[in-house]
Length: 144
Image 1 (spheres, rainbow, N blue to C red):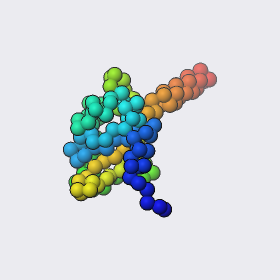
Image 2 (image 1 turned 135 degrees about the vertical axis):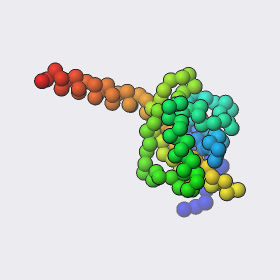
Image 3 (image 1 turned 60 degrees about the horizontal axis):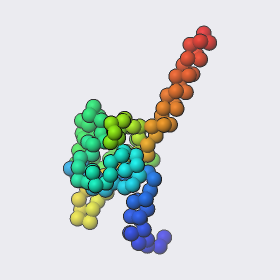
Image 4 (image 1 turned 180 degrees about the vertical axis):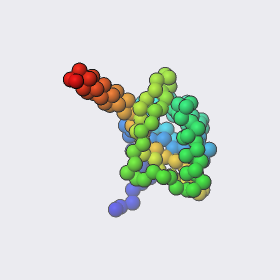
């Protein structure tokens, strides 16, 4: 494969419709693309250098940071390339979203570790799935 100019790759990440988020070892946001802006409602300027807690619901933070700290210590994550995680997240307007994301550990030019995620908002799809399950359950109850 031919060498690709890194500016082309960054341009793709900048314009991707999915969210691309990169955090450093301290859990501070270092990259936030337009897709992340659209999904979460925070501009890149608003979150730059801030904690990822801005999108993590309070009741999930402890578990998230425990897993994050373990991955940072080990230098590996328990999630494989094919794993797609589904979790609740917070939007700027206070709504709870359902997001799916994949995660990858990265290393900066200086050897510093980072965590990157590609994020998709699946809130509408999850709502449709829940409604379908509710209807099926209702049908099952009335059929008996």
